[in-house]
Length: 259
Image (tube, rainbow, N blue to C red; front, side):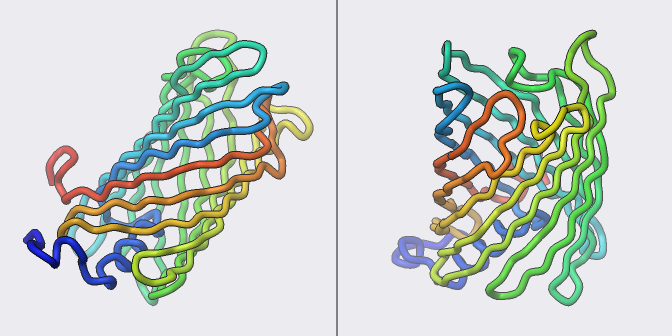
C-alpha cells in the first residue's frame, strides 16, 4: 500500500534506515536500478575521463527463504587524453544463490558471465568470460560488512583479443547514521593474471556518504557521493582519483521481468 498525505512526504526514519541497510547488503532481495557517474582525474597521460556504470539488481525468491539475486552491469566511458573517444565496456551478468541469513551472517555462491559488448579496444577485453562468485557478510542494525570473491576465465572471442584471467576481491563496510544516512569504505583488488608486473594489480579504495529518500512503501531512491583513490592503478588507463555520484532507484518487486 502506498503512503499518502503527510506520511508520503515524510516517511518514518526507520523505513529509510531499513532500506539503507538492505542496499548496503550485496545479497539483499531488493529490486533496484543504479547509475554511478565518476569523473576520473589522471586518466592516461595528462588526461581525464567520465565513467558511468549502470547496474540492475533483480532478486528471485525461492522456497524456505532461499533466493537468487542477479546483477547486470553495463559500463560506459568518455575519455580525453591525446584524443577523445567514448563507448561501451564489457557487460557482466551475475547470478548468486543466497542462503537464508543466520545469526546476522549471510552467504551466497553463483556464477558471473562477461559479454564482449565493448565498442572499442581499451574499453574492455572484448571476449567471453565466466567464473564462480562467492560472497559472505555480516549485518546488524548499524554495521554492514561483506566480502565477494570472483574468478573469471576467457571462454572465447575474436583472434588476437586480450585474454581474461581475472581474480577480483570486493570488500565493503557501511555504518548507519540514522534517518537514512550511511557512510562507508569500499575496497577492490583486481589481479590480472595475463598482465605483467605492477600493471597486474588494480586497487581502488572509496569513501562513500549516502542517504535514502522514500516516496512510498515500495519506491525510494538512494543518493550518494564518493571519492576514490587508486592505490595501485594497473592497466594502460591510470586514473589516480575519481569523484562520483550514485543514484539507486528502489522499485517494486516484479518491476523487472515479473515476479
